[in-house]
Length: 411
Image (cartoon, one colour):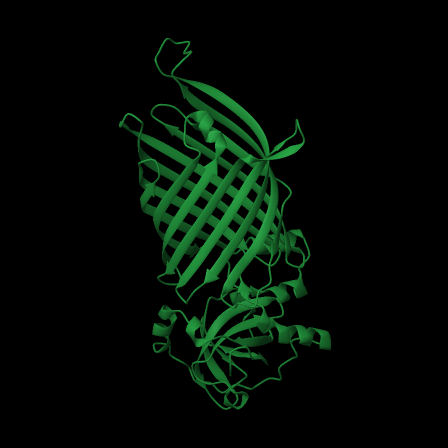
């Protein structure tokens, strides 16, 4: 079979968690080594590689299994052929070690995947749409999500949040602008994504050695965390967003940022269609955020304590309009590029204007090399700019370079 082709199949036998026998074989054009995606009526289920073919059936090694429970004889499937160069290197090494149990099975009649002509036309168009991920979950076709579009319910929420994953990221090497060197940076992600709901919780802790203007070194601790909740596909390719985040920064001298809280209860993301099979995600989002900051600034004059240097506390309440562009591009089986650009101009209620100079800007670029299905290595460049840092006696812009070792685990 050639890339882009698809055909209906039935699972005849589940020999192990990752090896199945299906009702298509040599007479259907399947050859040993074929690479496919398995889809049911509910969407993506797994990727597979043909281990052995007979006249009317074939045996397959599965990987990136999305849901074990639906890969059964009662679940009619379609397979979509993928290019050979998309097979991960570690999966290729496992193929020769797989043992196949021979079994005589009765080939059932395959039920049609789509019933009417209109849905069949959509199936033919699936090859023109890329696989993509929401958060970091496995790929699903956009058209299939649009077709099924589960309803909002407690049962659906419970089902979607049950399949949880945790991600760990450690950055032992981090260089910053303004002559700063980072001792260690650690990050924990808890995320899950289903057919209707997605959750992404993040916590980051950095302990740094900094140098002030006098050349003196001191320790600095920076904490930040966020929770993002999404209701997927309320309209075709349009999702609803909720956001909460906090940030703290303190050192041995003062606390530049005692706390910063952001809350957004209304937001939307739009996923852009593309014909590039390696483009995993491209989206735009808008979310207005309420922001409350409690900061400390160092002063050398007007110190009531009589000391040469003292700190004063400042509190600010803002409202910002955040616009975000997100891109995930797969360059090869192991290499992936990620780009996230967000900017949030200040909304001034006193003059009913949007202040684009007083802006919170952040651009994050990541080059990721996947060592296996679980582990990866990456380089991350982060640039941020905020004029309010000047109030604290700090530079408006920051540049960070990180080397990261990361891993993802199922819970």
